[in-house]
Image 1 (cartoon, chains in turn cyan, red):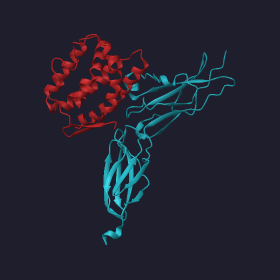
Image 2 (cartoon, rainbow over the protein chains, first blue to last red):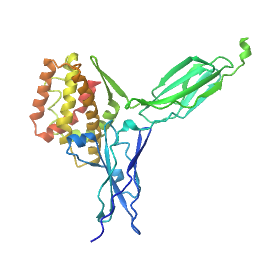
Image 3 (cartoon, rainbow over the protein chains, first blue to last red):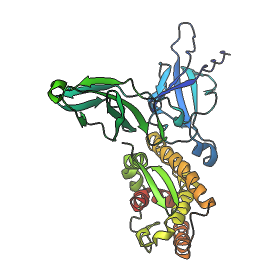
Image 4 (cartoon, rainbow over the protein chains, first blue to last red):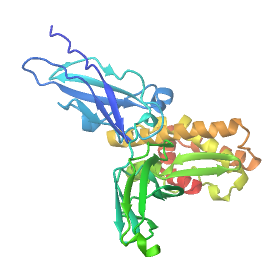
Length: 204
Length: 152
């Protein structure tokens, strides 16, 4: 009788900025192509629907050892994930994620940003991190932290106008991302400073 | 953004990922409503619309309705379509998350149940139990936008 296929091991989730990727170690069988299938189970299924599992069609009988589960992890509850291996008619047991996964543990990074001095206008371009994200942008005149202003950016359009600068003065900006659905924010980005056009001596 | 909605029920504030739920429902609405042959009958809106409810009762009826969908409806909505099942799971797990938050309001007595909401909920259950369970569940799921519109 053919040996049972070993179940996939080292099943884990890499979750950054609300993108959740399931990965596992390959099952190695000399001269064979191993295929994998993934299923998920939310807390609702565990508690109210007889612990049923739901297949992810995009990750059924795939040869890769990664699966993007972002679309299915769409509530802030605890999810379970499992992976199985197949070679033709041979099938492994399910390998299951160690522990449950809740999206509120995703790691959040500060947005990539570009600060622009356009004449006397202080502008910032923010990375589009997806629909779940908003941004908190702080700007101030260099050396005068008490002049710090805050702007909350809910929709990432092309450029955001932050302030009108004094001629020749230097202004600094930093930003953090915020996800309302899990009520968490990232650390602040590196501070970036730019100088307005014109000459400060004009004011002497 | 994935617009969270902060619902205010008197002293109770509940944050809801409304956009995510609506996106999930919109993706399967036509499929679900096509499975409901009796379009003239409503579970949520018969005989009166939710909009007729007294605002002080909104928290209680919302709490009841989330329990209704989680406890009774979603489990009877399994289909042969894997994509539809995934979206139903997404909505069900979001409802579960919010049912819990609303439950906290209820426990802190910030979600008073007046006679009007109790009457309305009794009517909804009667409408639901007047059909066979699968038809009732599919119809209730198909009316989710009525609930979401009323909540927004």
